[in-house]
Image 1: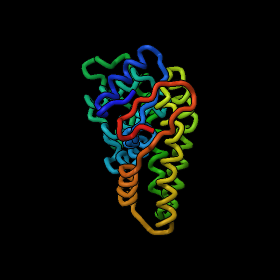
Image 2: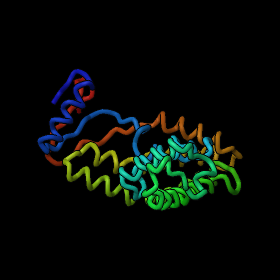
Image 3: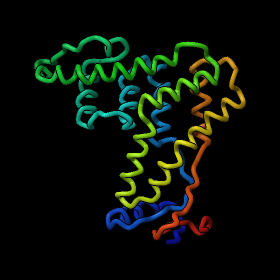
Image 4: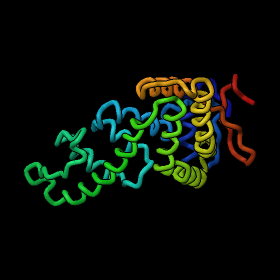
Length: 231
């Protein structure tokens, strides 16, 4: 299917998904909003904001955890209402807000403990020597903690079930694409001393400048492309 503008991509995508038709869109992908890069970016936002509510829930909404959407929504509403941030994450929650949460404090505190474990692992980025290489290694350790590879595999399986060839390729390639950003940083500046804030800005720039060009599928599927990008 040849189109004159990328504005046709989303309507066609919705139609093909509705009727379970495998499809591929021939366009360069911005990786800024992929759950993996969003996860990595959220590490630095959590640290720089002192565990602010927006930063913590930006982290949780990437999907690289075992929380259900309902649990995240419940906890986010409670945190906003009670002004939870910083050290308050590590104190037992006792606010009932005039009885509204009285019967849910046990559930909320169980969720809080799991979130605290995440925050403690992220705070480990502050420890040890601060070179580009050491920080990169610590980030890879965090990605292992968040079980990123297995969760990406689950995203790939779900995309296959949905006949979404685009998503299959995107989730398949994102690990290596993100890893290449870290590799280039280490290659150029590996032993350079750097602050976490400086590292975060460099990483942000690398992610902003990166993109994916997906390989067309070999199986039968519909390809959507602009005239000037058709292969």
